[in-house]
Image (cartoon, rainbow, N blue to C red; front, side, top):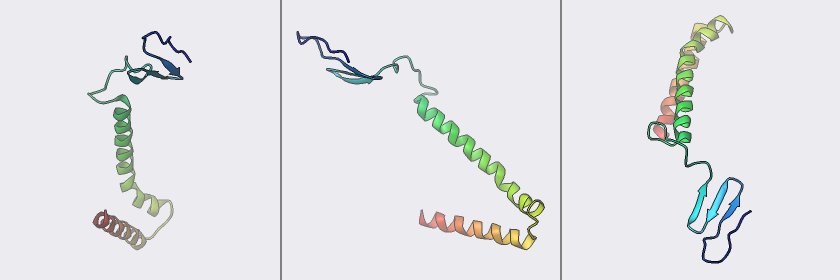
Length: 97
């Protein structure tokens, strides 16, 4: 921890990566970070991860009936019942959300 003298200069306190000055506080190491597409880097990468999660779930969804039929040996009527229940639950959740 470093503090400047009381002779008119603003007091500085450094704790870890946070620096507290007389004017407020700032995070060290953030002055060189550039935004990506006008967004904060954390927001940009959170959006990118969300995008890839959505893409992967949309890619897997059509494969579930094939998996049920070929690997688990489920009957076509059971697959239809599962798909119908999933659509019903999705519709009900849309109404209540």
